[in-house]
Amino acid sequence: MKGYARLAAATLLLAAAAVSAEPQTSAKNHAKTLTGTVATVDPGGKSLTVRDAKGRETTVVLTGATRVTGGKLEKGEKVTVRWMVREKQSVATVVMIQTPEPSATASASNTAPAPASPTPKSR
Image 1: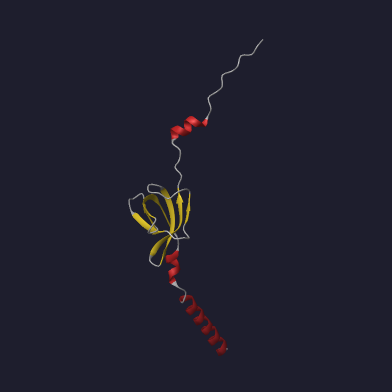
Image 2 (image 1 turned 60 degrees about the horizontal axis):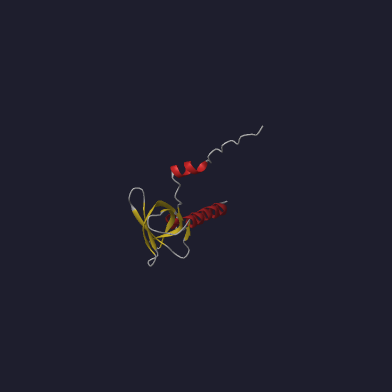
């Protein structure tokens, strides 16, 4: 019985040590999302600065693995950026360029065709 209790205690001790040995950096590597307007694009430095609705600017690094969707990345474009911290840098994983919504007047004038005039019937 003493041997079983010691074995159980040793197993619990080893399990606790294994759990505490897991790296705590996994929480720091989760992707973050940023939506805003492109303030600057630096193709030479492979970086992008995005200004959010509150006026804060965030610079992210673009890598060969960064996926850009929705068009050409230019200053003034509305974007959503998914990024994560790698080696003390904010690295973009996905940049989604948002397509502008059509204006209300353009969509209202183009939605329904004008009614056709009735043709007179011959008797």
